[in-house]
Structure formats: structure tokens, C-alpha cells
Image 1 (tube, rainbow, N blue to C red):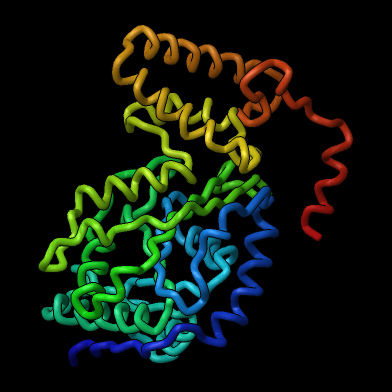
Image 2: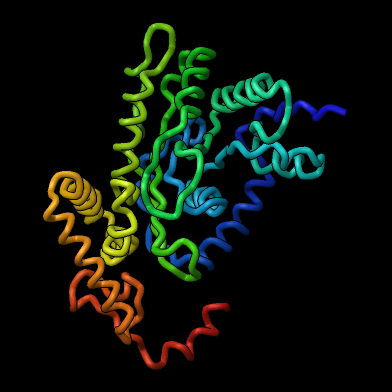
Length: 324
């Protein structure tokens, strides 16, 4: 017996999502110490079609975090095998989820099935929905932007071909910044930037200049998210970025962080002496953290001696209160 072909309903919002969001927000804010949500004044009106694009560091937690703080309901593409069960499918539709098929699903007509899903995506956008996409396509532990997949550009092209007015879709960059994504009660910030225009990158056939669009999108995300580059430097630069305590930086001071990271990237690529000095500093920090009585987290050390956070002797007695 063949696997069923899914055609999700066209909807802009759903009661299930509205009710579940309360629980998700409660869980996210209890697990993370949310230090700030910034830039959401950039978001369009509720009936304007939009697509949220974010960096992707924390697997399944990233969509939950986005749903908690983005003021509108987000529609996601989710792996198709979750939808085989009719009860699960009903619930997933209520959470604005739509199936996307992969090679591992072993369906012969995978392209046809995904075309149906993309058609529903376009219809939801026409109805004023907000989609959510991680352009990198997968997640990685380091806070950095990797190469972008082609799904977002393909969706925009299809939308504009179906309805030229959708060339005004608002592509909203959202940066998710975790102090330490896997640990309990670590600090977190979410930042939103201005919409990324793409209308001027469309040719007469409705095709988008993908390299130019991806570069524009990358630059927009770098203004709201931590992006450690190049990839080879990430293990060495990451502790120093954590010591900068980016999750505690005020919105008005945030612009200095992307500027610093861009400067580090350039120096790493062009200045061999600077690179060697940084490697030596990393080695010295590692040795010092192993022998120090101060907690070895970079955030506890900071970037200068006056930043060091000394452990409070009474702090362990308050730990049970964190679970209340």
C-alpha cells in the first residue's frame, strides 16, 4: 500500500497553535534566562505575508524559541514521516506544520508531493501567513552561519510567479543568541532586523539572483546574530566570543559585536602574526581555566580581570528555588 499524499489546509492561524504557544513560552522562559527581545517593531502587520529566517544552532529548540517570541503564528515545514499517523497529522496541522519529503521517505513521486506542499505554502502566504525557514537547512553547535540552501529562494520565485503581489513578501531576519544552548538557566537574547528586500533581484522571468540574495540575507543575519568566521577558527574564537557575554549586551550597544567579529575574521585570514597570537592566547586561557578556582566558563571570566565573577558561597543554597 502506497503512502498517502498530503494536502495541508490553507490557513493563516489555528486555535491549537494559540493554546500551545502559552505552554511553549512557559517552558522556554523557565529553561532559558531571557535577557531581551529586540527589534520586533520591524515586523509587518498581521495580515501581511512574511517569512522569518533565523540562524540554526539548537536543533528542535530553535523553532520553539521562535514561536515563543515572534508575535505572529509561524508556519513550518516538517519532515513528512511525522504525518503518517492520522492523529499526529491532525495535531501537526493545528500547529501550522506542513510535511516536506526527503529521499529517506522512499516515495517515488517525491518532487510531485513537494510541489503540492509548496503550492500550499504560497496559498498560505497569499492569505497573509508567516512562514519560518532556517536557510542553512541544518543546525551546528557553533554560533556561525553556514552556506544557505536553495529552498527559500525557490519558494520566493514560486510565490512571485503565482502572484506578482507576493514580490512584497517581508523576509524578516531573526537572530537567536544562546549563552550556552544545552545548559539549564543560561542566558538568551533574540533580535530582529529590518526586512530583506528581494524584488530588485528578480528578472523578467521571475527568477531571483540567488548569489546576490543569499549574500544580502547573510549580511542581514550577521547584524542580529553571532557569526564566528572562518570555520577553521571557530573552536579557538568561540571561548573569546562567549567571554564577550553577547547575550547581556544592550540593544543599543549590539552593533559593536558584529563589527568586532568581522574584524577578527579579516585579521585571521590576512594577518599571520595576529592568528598565532590568538592561538597562543587560547592555549594560555585553557591552561589557566584548568587550574583556577573560578568556574571555567568563559562567561564567568569575561574579557578583563575586573569582569571575573567570583562564586558566591551562599549560591548553592538557592539552587532548589530555580525549580519553582
